Length: 104
Length: 318
Figure (cartoon, chains in turn cyan, red):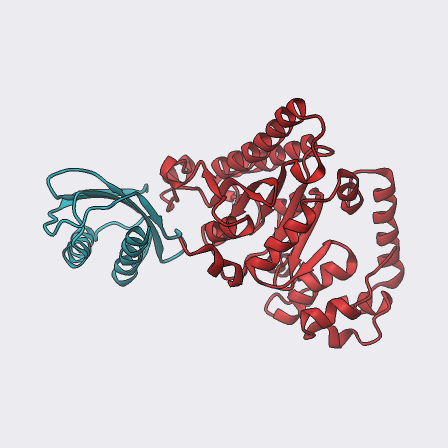
C-alpha cells in the first residue's frame, strides 16, 4: 500500500494564464490542497495528483477537464494532495484557488 | 488569501492555520518560511499510503507586530489532527532557532535595543501531540522543540496561543506548559491526556468525553484561566489574539519570567502547593475548585459572557 500518483495533461484553450503561483486548501479528511503555478506548455494544463485512493483515474480526468473548460485556465501546472475528496469538493477547491489567483 | 482586515474580525476557532499566522501579526508583514511551494512533506506518510500535505500541517514564518519582529508557528488541526511529525517538528525547531539567532545578531549590533524591539516567538497550538505514524521521529521532534525553548529562555520570549478546535494535548501540552506565556480563548482547550484517551483508558465513570460541558469546564480556557494554567483569556477573534500579542510584545524579560509556570525552585514549590491542595480538597468537579478560589456562584461562570467573566472572576492562588 502506498500513495498513488496520477499525472496527465488537459488541453486548455481560452488562455486565462496565471499571473502568480497560488496555494489553496487544507488536506483534511475528505478534502484536498492544490498548488497552481504558471507553466508555458502550448496552452496545456498539466496535473499531478497524489491520493490514497486507487481506481478513479477517469473520474479525476473528467473533473479536471470540466474545471479547465469552465475556468479557461491555460499554461499551468497543478499539484494536488488529495485525502479522499469527492468530485464536488475537488471542483469547489479548484474554483476557489482560481478565484484567489485572480484576486491577487 | 483573505484580506487582513476581514481576518481580524474572524473567529480564531474556525480559521485555518495559515489565516491565523497571517492575522496574528500586523497587516502585510507575514512572510512564510518553508511554505507549501517548498514542498517539505512527510516521507513516512508517503510510505504508509497516508495523504500528505505540502506544509506537513505546520505553517512557519516571520512577521511584525508594532516594532517587534515575530516568528510565527501555526499548527493545522484538520491535517491528521495537527499531529507533529519529523518535518513539522523540524519546522518548529528551526523557526525558534532562527528567532534566537536573529536576537543574538541584533543584540550584538545594537546593544541598546528596547524590549519592544527584540524578537518574540508565537506558537498557535492545534494538536494532539506526536504523530503516531512517525513514532520516534515525532517524539524526537518534541524533545528538540523543548530544547529550543530552553535555549530561548531569558532571550526570546515564547508565547503560546490556544483557541483552536483540536486544542493542545499530548506531548505538545508539555511544550505549551514550558513556554513563557499562554493566551487562550474560552474555546481553547489545554491538557496532557485528551478526554477521549482518559475515557478509553479509565472508563466512562471516570471521564465522559461525550459530555461537552464537562470537557470544557475541565480543559477549557475559562478553567485554565482560573487555575492559572493560562495567563490571558481573550475573545475568539484573530484580532483579540493579535492585540494581546501586541500588548505582550512590549513587556520585559522579567515580566515574562514571572508569567512562567515552570523553571525555578519557587515555581516548583507553587506547583507542589497546588498538588497538596488537590489532595486535601479531593474536588469532584472543576466547579469545586472555582468555588474554593472564591467564586460564590461557580455554575454561573460557565455561560457568562467574557467581559463579565473577566470583571468578576476570582483566580486560584496557592
